[in-house]
Image 1: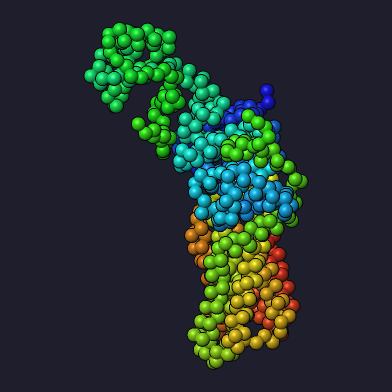
Image 2: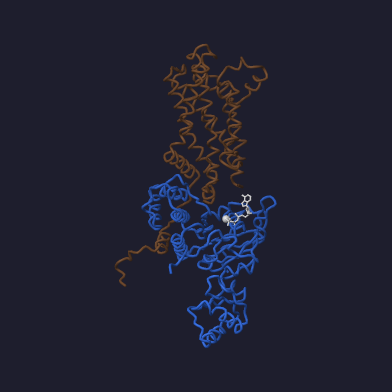
Length: 325
Length: 278
Ligand SMILES: Nc1ncnc2c1ncn2[C@@H]1O[C@H](COP(=O)(O)OP(=O)(O)OP(=O)(O)O)[C@@H](O)[C@H]1O
Ligand SMILES: [Mg+2]
């Protein structure tokens, strides 16, 4: 198996704080690998060790076949890192930043400028080429930051919380970019606090908390490990809800949850095939249902099941997009 | 769907794939070229943030005028005589003071996150530091120029002539280049840009004032003289003064050069080590 990243018992301590406390990862080349965890989980610290910016206090890490400590220059030649916070010079213009990086990667003067413009165009930033980066919006900054990481095509790219604080449109743009990078053959390790993001982008996910990997797998596997899906039913008449909930609970042998909207009831189900029958019984009683959906549990539920606390507590912003009624 | 016309709609993933496909991998930049590139960055920063030159230009002008007219008469009997004595000193002090911006710059880079970006590049790691020092050299040169212009305007004449002045400035640059390594260490160690300022001031104020910069040490109490005599700033100031006064003392100059070499030999490796393990 072709591993892009392999770590064994990776440790980093800051004083008494074991920020990364024995992380084992085996990440295959190609696609997106998601590292999911709340604030302070140790995501950035882990990435920094893999990108050779921090020296581990314990354990080993191999990136693209090179040891991150002993063969750091070889790692650096093939990976790129986009930090959690803007990692370009805010005083310089977008173009100057890219030219600077291109020159450092070994481009000649003219070629560096050409490459800079090419990237700005690809990232829809050509109009702001001559503006200082400090005048860029959050979304533009993120894009130019990523552009700076692909001046020379990296085999592996670290993206540390690329969409934190972005509006939905900018977030979608970053997602498009990530998909583009993967399409071009770059392996991506992405950290996020957003369950939805990991679910959308990542082929496999490691959930980390307090510096440890507490779960690993595809998002489907993670959900399956929680053991159930959920059915959501919205009744036409709020007055019917109690009755519907009772009927469903009886048929599906599950605890009904009455949602605060007054019309929705949610139940966990172990056997999705039983749902059709249960809804049939509701219809037979003449109770009207406006809408129902059957889905796997969300990653939020996975997080709750794994850590015993809801992920909302840690995520600073919700990612839900308001859909006007 | 025809294949003749390109879709006008912008889909970022497609354009990113195209841009990545177009990426060539040039040969790695060598140490000289990456250092010069970082030096170019320092120039760009001066272009975009000209305010950063404010301290560099106003400080020396203010000092020259203030010391000459406020203390000049009292120290030397006349402002004119004092100017002749003090200008090489003020030049020294100004340039030595500006060295602390080296630490400030690196600390701000760390603070802002650019530092990590640069360190993750496949270039000779020290080139960021060397490039920063190259940029600083420009600052030192500019500040020296300001002091000299103001000095000449208010009546300073260098007996050593143009050559003497140029040599004095070069000597200052050599010394400051070595001192910058110390500030790099401070910049890498200290938590915030403000703390860098504070630490540097605490060192630089006594170092520049308790020296022969503003007054001849002969009038100071003996215990103070003892310090003044070994203060590197005194040594530097005397060497520069000699050159500008057309009385170059090869002993003083040699001491400064040796001192610069020693400072660099001691602090550069420490700075580089810190930089690598930061
Ligand atoms: N340079 C440092 N010095 C001291 N402690 C640190 C340092 N960097 C990180 N830590 C601590 O290590 C722990 C992990 O931090 P880390 O930044 O890796 O978390 P994270 O998962 O990236 O969080 P976030 O989502 O907030 O970015 C935290 O408790 C943090 O306070
Ligand atoms: Mg982080």
